[in-house]
Image (cartoon, rainbow, N blue to C red; front, side, top):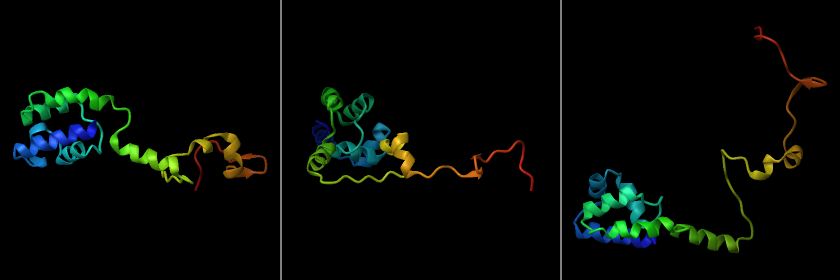
Length: 134
């Protein structure tokens, strides 16, 4: 449904003789957001944006009427291809620089993988009271 919404926005925009940047200026969004909407590749448009697009393009409430169907769509169009590939995948690898995978969050899994913290004495962690002298 997001693809249909985007196609309608593109058709109305070109019929009006507007560029994406000009439509973005009329609706107070950046041109890349108009590109995302037309390609159905970004976040779903808000109702306020659908109203602004409708008004700027003179769509006679067409985009406002389409908006609920776009918003109710469970998975965006681009994710369907990802799910198809996932079904056929033999292995899944993930790179996440700032995320700790779920399995590493369990102590049973983490213990053999992560070394224990450094200790100062034979029986406990480093500790001191007050500021460290130079």
